[in-house]
Amino acid sequence: MVKYSRQREGILRNLQSRRDHPTADMIYDSVRKEYPNISLGTVYRNLTFLTETGQIIKISTQMGADRYDGFIKPHNHFICRECGMVEDMEYISCDEMILQASGLFPGLIEDCELQFFGKCKNCLSGQ
Image 1 (spheres, rainbow, N blue to C red):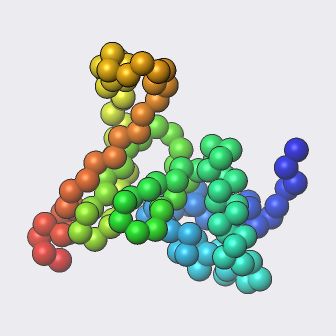
Image 2 (image 1 turned 90 degrees about the horizontal axis):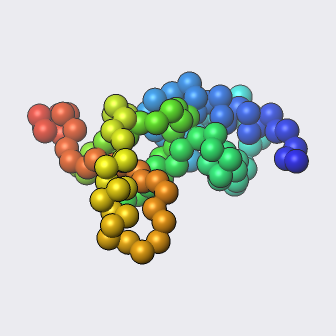
């Protein structure tokens, strides 16, 4: 059994209240307002725990720091290759791709994640 942590709950609440897909540093800066003595290491440890227990989603953007999402219902992400913005997208099921990939792979494929990459509307318009 894992010990209850007010700081962990604060991190989770913070993530669930936002849709900007923050980095650990952004979460740290925000959570410090409520918990001034929290360390960056504590934030990282709790983000790892919350990810491993399925309470948040970790998004590897391939463009710098990982991002985190407190909205865990099935959905996809768009990642802008120019500015690094991460935005929620409506869920597109992986079922067809899993069926197709299963015929090409001798193991058991259980799940997949879809991420879409390109340029966001702000980068396209030069803003």
